[in-house]
Length: 249
Image (cartoon, rainbow, N blue to C red; front, top):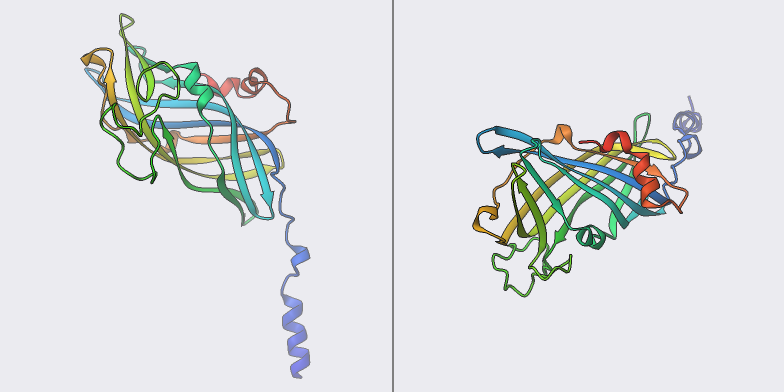
């Protein structure tokens, strides 16, 4: 067989670029439903699963396989502590203050389709750090601490209710590291897993009883996210309705 024939055979056996599946377009506005979860130790009850359920609107910009994600609005942030004995919440002003981005991401080809990959990124709450990996401040007087919910207390305020009788507040700064990997199921739907780590420092409390501390144990099997494409003008109430069945703790 001549060299030309061999080359023609080899070139003919390599799939042309045009034969590859077309890269999906994720450009646009999306609703995000995210659940992060960990196990924590409840006094007298033992280990319980606690979850943070969040619904938000975000925008995706796309240049080929490269993406940039921007959080436009957090619509809901619910804390399920795994027991009715302890309830926590944050102020609506804090929820409205949360904005994240730009977050670099990408689309990867995977056998049978595509996946959305968001490499690890850091979210800081109640604190501004020159390097996001610097140690969190331990004092309320630290100039890096600020008041995102505007209630005059350092960091952001966590309201705590125990046994339905005792109520109080803790003032917290927090660092969260997250990453996503999700299957692009259709041009309008992405679903996948969330890997995350949480670190927080309690700077003060309304009473010593509410000086909460401690670190949970991640529960990756209970953490996930769903992205649902929006037309662009939906209200938070309409976005929450999309995930009603999933939102219930």
